[in-house]
Length: 393
Image (cartoon, rainbow, N blue to C red; front, side):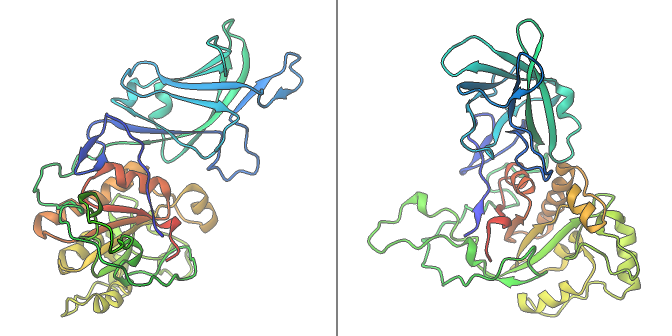
C-alpha cells in the first residue's frame, strides 16, 4: 500500500477541491531530537544540566515543551509532553515570511505555568536550510543562566508561484473527474528495491482505491481520485542537473567509463553532449503504446522537457524524483542535489509549461525521499503525490 504524504491542518493554506497547498505562506517543519539524522550518537530532545554542572539530567519526569511563533500570531502553537511518545513526530508552522519568523521553545512543568527555561530560534536560522538542518539551542532560565539545551531538526517548504489555481484551468486536478471505483485487480508485490526501473509501464495498481462493498451506497466523498489515477503510465526517474534542469536518467552515475560522476555534477548542455557522444538521444517511436515507449526512454539521455514534448498525451507519466542527500553523495561519490525548493520547483515548472501545449495528461509524482514528497504535495494542487518509500511495489 502506498502511503500518501500527510499534511497538517492549518487555516493559512489554500484548499481547492480538498487538496491543501501553499499559496503565499511557507511551511516550517520541526522534529525534536535528531530522529532523521544518520549519526551514531543522537542527543535527546531536551537535556537539562544538573546543579553541579558535572553531569546532565536528560529528562525530568514531568515536563511540557510549548513551541510558539513570536511575531506571527496566526501560526498555531504546539504543546508536547516530555518524554515524547513518538520521537518522529513532526510539528508544522505556516508562516507569512521566513525573514520575520522567530520560534520560541518554552519549558514548563506538566502541571503549572511557571517557565523553567526558554530557547529562542532567530529568523536567520531558517534562511539557509538546504534540506534538513540539525540544531541545538540553549535553554535559559529567568536569570539568563544556561540550564539545558533543546535539540531539533528543521526543514522549510516554500510556495511554488506557478501553480494553476483557477478552476477549469489548463492543468486539470486529479480529483476533478469522478466515477464510482471498481474493485481493483490483485496487486502482486515485488521485492523491495532502492528504486524502480526506469520507464516501467504500469496501470498503477498501488494507487487504486479500495473496493467498495456492494451493500454500501456510493457517496460523493468516496468518489474522489478513482478516475484519473487509473490507466497506463510510464515510470521515469527524474534528476536535476547542476544548473537546475530536470532530466530523465535512472542511475546515480552517468555512463562515462572511468569516472564516477552523477547528474548533479553536470550542466544540461554537458548532459545533452553526453547523449550525442554515446548515441543515446531520444528516438521517438511510431506508436502510443506505453510498452513501446518504455525501452526507448530507458535507453535515452533526455531532458524532461524534451520527453514531455513528444510523449503522447494519452500516456500517463509517473515521475519519481531522485534527490541526492548529503549521505547519498558521500556514499556514492556524487554531488549533492540543490536546495530542496529549487529542486522541486524546477520539475514543477517544466510540468506546467508542458501543460500549456499538451492538455489532459495524467501525472503522478513519487519519491523515496519524504521531504521531496512533502514539498510536492504542498506546492501544487493538480497532481497526486505518493511516498515511494512506503510502497512494496
